[in-house]
Amino acid sequence: MSNSFGKIFTITTFGESHGPAIGGVIDGCPAGIELDFDAIQKDMDRRKPGQSKIVTQRKEPDEVKFLSGIFEGKTTGASIGFIIENVHQRSNDYSHIKDSFRPSHADYTYDKKYGNRDYRGGGRTSARETANWVVGGAIAKQAIPSIKINAYTSSVGDLFLEKPYQDLDFSKTESNIVRCPDSEVAEKMIKKIDAIRKQGDTIGGTVTCVIQNVPIGLGEPIFDKLHAQLGKAMLSINAVKGFEYGSGFCGAKMKGSEHNDIFNADGTTKTNLSGGIQGGISNGMDIYFRVAFKPVATIMQAQETIDKDGNIVEMHGKGRHDPCVVPRAVPIVEALAAMVLTDFMLLNK
Image (cartoon, rainbow, N blue to C red):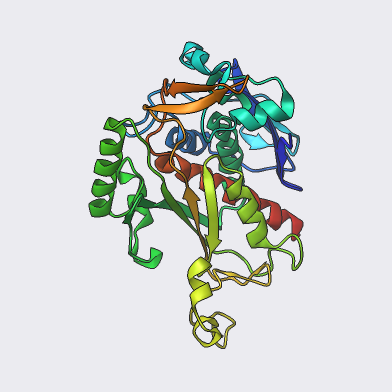
């Protein structure tokens, strides 16, 4: 199932949405890092369910219990084992999909591939798994303290934050429940998500991430390009439909004379349409990228689907689900970016 991620700084995870716990093992973390456990829990709290009216109301404290690899508050270089207990499952909410497949979910493909599907909350395919990644990312951030990683909600449906990231105050991202660092746009986003929720529907959006103070030279020129690994990480997140960095798809509309980043004498560039990466290798400029999330597939409306025998049946969404996954995805994007950067920093030594 490819339950591991990374080359030197690696995380291997386990657990299902409605099992007793989820967790993982982090390997390759350097010894001697004095961990800020409050910072780790803060990132967990940013991702956890039940935090506001515009996310799923499943109540999980998401408290991390570390089992190994840490002594007297510092990493030892040994593997870091951890678990996160599941305490608020409502498995009966999923009894209606035991023999049917939810549209646009992993139900059908998982069943056909493995033949034994845990239908409770999506089992292993649930976004509950991403809590493990946030633990890994929170530790990775502390392994590379000089690199600053800030993600934020940049769109919800057709509502876009038009300001460039250079004009934003990232300290305001956590000032509202949608995690948009512009209060006026944030309020519109919150109202839109709430209105969609009341309709029993869902909506998508985008998360933008900015990585600053990245040293020159991270990444390889062929199959381990820095942007390729960032893309792989982001496209591993549940509900992600797209990834673009730097000028992204807008760059395809430009001429080379418009797109080229002209050098300054010190090696920096006058513009940064490359997004901080050239030839797969970081150039010292800010890395920025955008991740697109589809609308959550479970909607509180009747839809046609098929059962395991191929019969057309009607299904109505049940349970507790996000009307928009984007606000809770912000710390997940940061976490995976941190693990990719930490891995490349260690590879570059």
